[in-house]
Length: 446
Image (cartoon, rainbow, N blue to C red; front, side, top):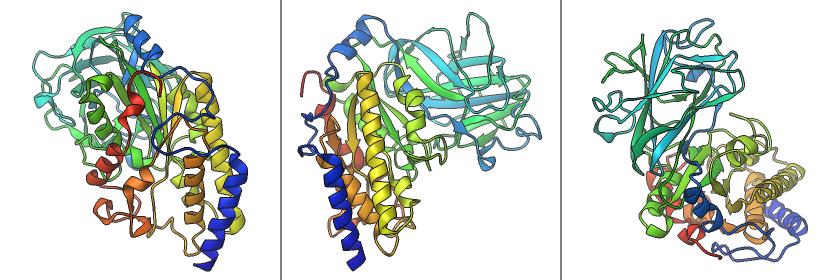
């Protein structure tokens, strides 16, 4: 423990030198050191409704599919995926509206993605992760007036607007048919969907149920759903890793902490027009590629290019710390590098008028990330101290405080621990969602 204490002292000194800003309370108040940005919930949110601007209502972070997360047999071949196959998936809608449009991604595909036919429908019973739809609810989705579209390699496609009344907090089914499949085994997906998808051979887009379908708890090709809201609305993006992607949450339960924050926002008239958009992926890192591109590299795609975004919550860095070296020098280096990365994120987001909220990193004591010398814990504490006191973020969300065991602050509260001492269960994710001050989303200056 003597070396760990030394590391904490060294890291604290490093943070003090790196920050150079007046401390502020972690209560969700605006930082005096922040660059001027529009007041969220006033200008941008109002214009979203008045101008008919599109706003994200759901999104998933695209990434290259690992071999173990490919579509099950027989839908993955030696050189094709989902050839002559129907793929049915459900997504959870944050905001309602009278029009929708769909985004399909081929960001990591090894070939063009020829989509033959697409439809949206209401899932049977309104439930997530089901293979059946409400009879007669299916609506054809078009691209430039055409039934299908070839999504070029590395690109995305946005559908035509579709007149469809969707309600906030409901689920929507998206069904794709690929006559030719994708001529590659490099495909774009979001493996951590925690939502069941269905695959069946042949064209069954209009079928009420997909009898005998194969299943996988991954999303393929879907990257976003946008709505034209009827009220003032905007989107808040969560930039994160598996703790936001929901490892430990309930499959088909939509009880990750961003989902539970969304439920709180929807329950109040002043914040009902805020969509929480989850752009997180398990294994993701801020500084270096892990599972998916690093956060600095994907910031433009996953945050700045999203529709209707005026807030960003940054809750990422645990994987960077946990995979760093354990010497004093390496502990100092990862602390300084993460601080530099957070500064870059804030600067780039502010340039687009987006307010940035920094979330403290939750404990991992007892996990493999927790080295005996305490170097990783020292770095986590130093990074959290900078997040709380630097003044660089527009506000601070103290998720560390919400999740930690008061008696052993380097560990998760046992009631929230899935057992790996890093990820949280639904009760723990509720605690994180409840720790976010709703005043950060209300109209008017703070």
